[in-house]
Image (cartoon, rainbow, N blue to C red; front, side, top):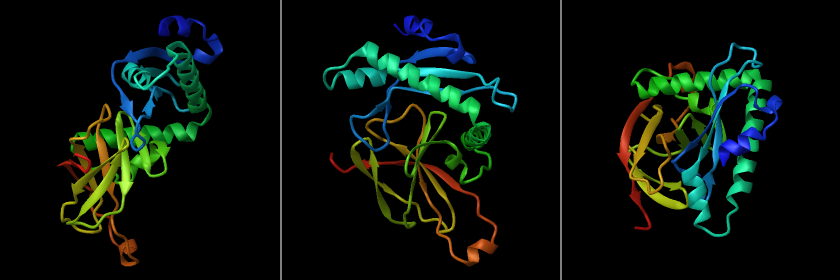
Length: 222
């Protein structure tokens, strides 16, 4: 069905789209239950001016199936609207070169994070904004929260609440907590960024390297 729909797209709107793929994965919304991302546009290669940007569009069959289980669901209509929405994203990426540069940098820093290399603790803010306090870079979702070290915080995720312990580290250190045990995890990492505490003196100090670790979550409605 997606192949047939793609053939109906005018060439001027699909220029630079190198692939339209259907993934079996489901992409749950980070906070709202029964809400799923149906598709996304992933920028790939470009020379710097945006006009020659190449992108890949992914539609998530698992998300479509999850929504279809909730009630009446017109697969063709939803697929066409999702495809058109992601094509519009591709055109917007091409028009806003500075936004492309910022995302490209965020993707590079996120790669460094995965590789255990030093990375900028604020890189995720240059990713795609999902909603206030939530960003997405590649397949990874970042939720920024305030929390005191050595305590527990409550984390909302896809309509459910979880508890996680915040390790006792230096208050001025950014904590990247990779959540393990979520009921509906994203395709990549679900990361809670516990923001560092900042005072006036901290403006004159060198920012400490962020600390990253995997933490097990406890569902509060179990």
